[in-house]
Length: 68
Image (cartoon, rainbow, N blue to C red; front, side, top):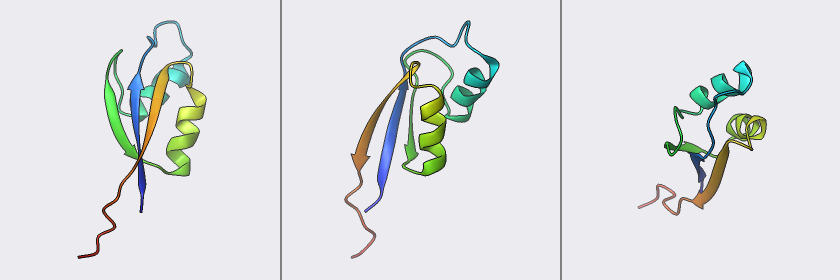
């Protein structure tokens, strides 16, 4: 059972550090209100930890485990 993270950008990247802007781009976000769903992995959690003041995160558990 894998989990996924739904990430929504809630604040503007204008005036933030260049590393914060590039982190948002790496997360697939490009503006306020943009949403992206990514797998729950340590790399993604680390990127979110860099910009917690700009995004909100919802964790959802995927119930499909691939078995028939």
